[in-house]
Image (cartoon, rainbow, N blue to C red; front, top):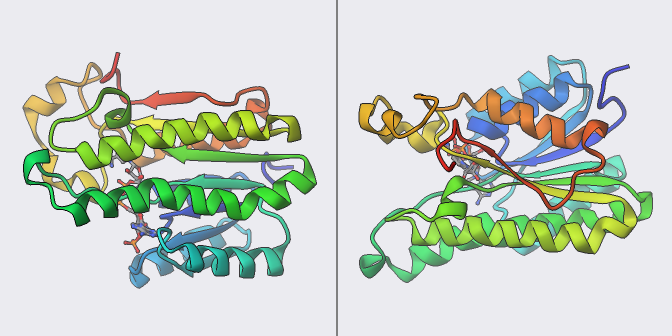
Length: 246
Ligand code: NAP
């Protein structure tokens, strides 16, 4: 029997990048996978195909995670059709970089709304069924920027540091019901988000392991945290950063 057979995983931002690789890894481990995406239909269709080709059930929902009503409706539909979510991966995230003194209100607010409030809304939507089952895994995609801060990313660093606080609060709150909540903190990963920084020798030199991560290297850690092997880990932040934040 596969490690996650019989489990239902929900992944936000599953259409591209790290989220797609998480969908792939969880489906190959035997889980049915539902994912949320913002609007890239073509990418979402490709991810759905990847999930289904693993021989499990796949579902996609176009939903802006910062829209509490949309999150409520999407998870309502998902839970109504499929019962409880066993694994939630809050992976959807955006950047709107700029120096603080010039950062517009809307750029600060939007990044916090998607990266932090979105993770809260999705967690809140699945917690009741996890509590009923007395089991569940919530995994939040934070960032090294949330641990160390990053110039030009006040909004992003604040949202990702907030996500670590959310992770620890939920870990404490949900532990009595055997639900764990952990975070993964990547450094630089080869995705659309970092396309502008690719092939930057200076940047690569700043990473002890000398290269960006591949998205699947992050997905493997998420799969571990979603598995029974991680049942005794909660409130933890695991860096997947090639040593960037040592
Ligand atoms: P990406 O390639 O830009 O993909 C972003 C994903 O999030 C897409 O699936 C996108 O959907 C979805 N998304 C964006 N806004 C959304 C919203 N409002 N509601 C629902 N879904 C939304 O990003 P990535 O590099 O894979 O990053 C994934 C996560 O890892 C993010 O939280 C990011 O902050 C974090 N991270 C990334 C790096 C890195 O180096 N790449 C490093 C540290 C942390 P559409 O396809 O529909 O647009």
